[in-house]
Image (cartoon, rainbow, N blue to C red; front, top):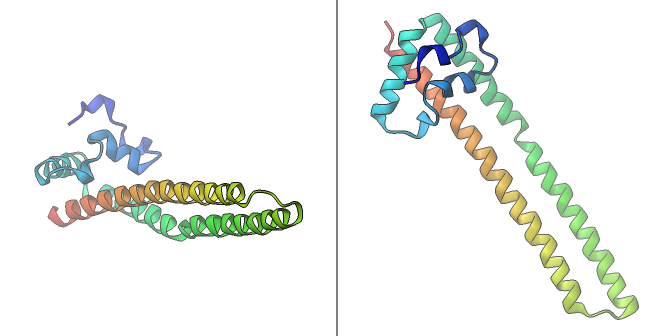
Length: 148
């Protein structure tokens, strides 16, 4: 575990997730023995009431993350609308001026590829953050269950 002078005191915590990662970064994905060390360190430093406060704040973050997850979907719905409008506009130009349809098809596929890549990256980032929050939440819940 990290040295005690590097870890913030309970009253100085601004972000629970950052605070918990000071003990051991990414412990939610580590082995059970490393998670047990993490839980022992938390139980050693904090009482039941403080762990409940940390757990409550993480639960709030999880709820906020759930509530705002629709924003990614809305963003890509808007992007799809724009791409659809662009395709319609480009097809009109092709008919009017007789441009090469292969070039226009390439541009349309390029837009779709960019949108799909952006969706994939944003989804992975959002999923990773949600997984981290849930993992630390589970570890704090286990700490509470182990306390008398």
